[in-house]
Image (tube, rainbow, N blue to C red; front, side, top):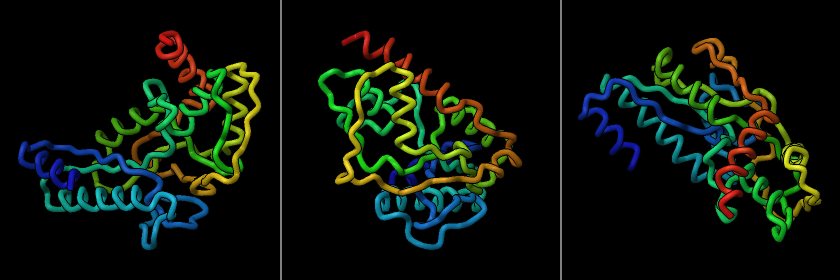
Length: 223
């Protein structure tokens, strides 16, 4: 696999530390709160099963290389990432950049998949980078650490925030015929605080303002 090839190349090149970017989607389906102390033992949520299994396999491969002493490994399980330089292509963008584009595009209907009740742990890219650096410095044990916001935000709340920040006059339409994925993702970040001294610093409103400003200055201004 790609992961095993990368890990083998790192070992052959005598790379001392390797970090694997995993995902909260690896957790068992039906978990109310995701704790990095708990191993996964059952299937992930079916909406993300292929992606989740690829991340599970990557974690196990990294742990194997780490346990064999080939390099020191670290694993971060990242929440719903967003921030400047994200993918703002409406055909393939994730939820936050997609909603930002819809808020600014006159001819694009503000359609939101699902009921808007699904909840996510959003985390700004700057917080992610900070966590990754601290994890490599302080906790290279191939033992997963959750990286995200302790507070979950519903998609409906997210939409309202984006409309408020952008000043959009559009009315969102929640298309309940479309899938909305995992109903609720709430995580524990106590391990990150305890082991690497990390907590998310950028709240969602602040992070959205930063992301929207970048979009306006670097993409919208070019159109």
